[in-house]
Length: 257
Image 1: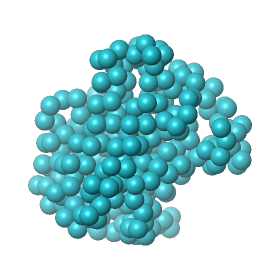
Image 2: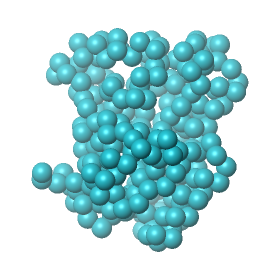
Image 3: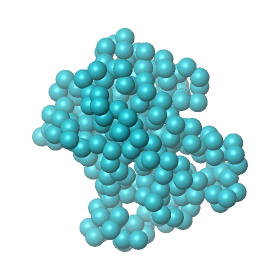
Image 4: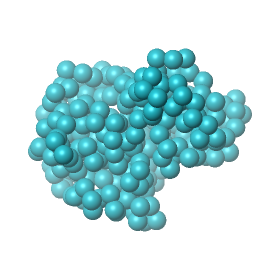
């Protein structure tokens, strides 16, 4: 297939591949197709079995475990980037988590511990990655994360993840402002609803998919390849003048309340 943009020579770290249907996998496929060198993470040994087929198919150079809840594991990952590559050109953060009992309940009923876990894994980990990536991006780079329109308005059953994604989007703007002088850009990609394993944790997500499909002007939802195409553009030199944005890729769903 024809490359979307030229990423030859660029080194990218993809965090959050769960299986071949995940958003991170769609982005990794686009990065690889455009010529980027890639590394990827897996949550733990059990999850590695689901990630490995994606790694093999795309020719990802190396993998490492990354559970941001385990002290030192994220730092060890970036130490490997330094040791293996000596630098980094782009990074994709595509992880989110909230305890089920907090995710499936009202926001006002969420526990302090559950809220803290959700914010730490889904938002603060992006700030940690930005800090660790900064010294590796000596000539500039791009940091991407994944959000959802439930950050801007109430989406039934999205619950706790709404405030958490709102925080992630705000964090992205601050990252872009603080690291911009070093030519490091930051963006939050906001896909429409996609049937991924992560999304299946949201109560009655199939109903959300049906409502979204009926609402979009195109009459169909986006898939992970659409997200990957946008991600590849954003990390390319073609987008070097763009930073600090929250960009929807949803076939126009954001046009409607």
